[in-house]
Length: 510
Image (cartoon, rainbow, N blue to C red; front, side, top):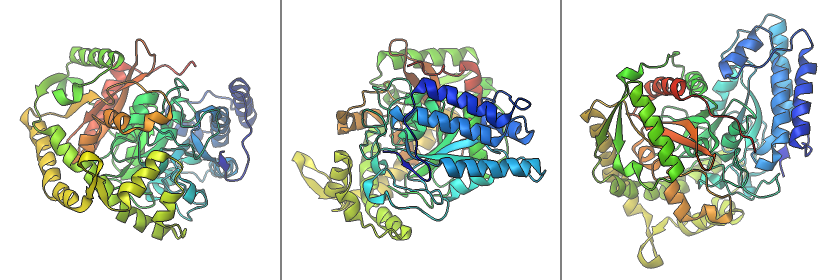
């Protein structure tokens, strides 16, 4: 069930809810102010600033859409009373001439449930933390709210962020468990930032926050047709976020458009606004390892996007990255599994919740997550040969001291060899898979992170861009560009230019 911070959410059929949203919007604004909401975060913030629209009207409409989307299992907590009160404060300040027209003024957003929002439950998608409600915002949330954003909900996720399927039975509001794809409810929303991706794909809000360890803001946006940025590791503050690995974790902005991802990134980092880059100056690399195992829809959509960008003047280069899979494998599991214990123990202590890591694992609802914690994380083990486990510390130390620096050097050589702005590939080699318990298998996990994991381990930024609906499946296909460390803003400029060429995906129809 959705846990509501203050007000219960009734089950509302989608058609009725859409009508309610429209009526609510009109009533809140009144006939003199009944303007059509803009389709970008910046546009809506301007409308609130100029009083064409009230924040309350935007928030009420988003809340109605969230209730109507209950079948997606996208939300853990819907904060109806808190969000409405925040919107009313913004509108009152506007009416009194006391508002500074902040960049996100009055715009509703959602936040993944492992990122702390003051006064709201922060469960990280797991039963043991259902009762934990932090007193302060995580710094990333604090910066968005200071810029005027209104948090309407905490979003569902793969339990403890330890997976990419989002098949989490802990919170269920729809007829079937697991966070569901906005374009096809029989399919997965991806993970681990599943609910934020589904909420964006379903047009509940324009923007939100997720976290990414090995693909967790990029995979949900690839599956649900949104844009997202995994920033260079360390670029965003990590406090107030339930962790997996301090080496690999980062929060990341997710939005319906690259332009809105750029805006959220600008607010979080204090960067200056940028404009789309000239595509005739863009140089991108193609690596064989990232172009393997594609399904037909993904291959067709990716090749069509490459051809379109070539026609716009983008230069593509086939490059080699020797030993990429071997180096990545030497880092990925050893770092995540080993750091997960110390990082989670420290986080639980900081929460003051009284929950131990053993209790966290014992109460885990997802078999894959429970098994990972009890079999690997807590005993500090890694899978070994012939169904054995081995001590994780030697592999972890080798990963940190040797393999990770080598992987980072490999990326630097790849970027520098042709003066590349980035390496481009399908974000996930296939469209969204079926939402079933089997979707949390190791095989599905490994296939899904094929392309997102290496850049995560190297600590470089990665931008996911929706490029098409699959010709056969009619499901979203995503394209990612990984850039040199620290090139986040340039990636966003390139992404905005690509977005202008390829256009936005149509809204879900089923």
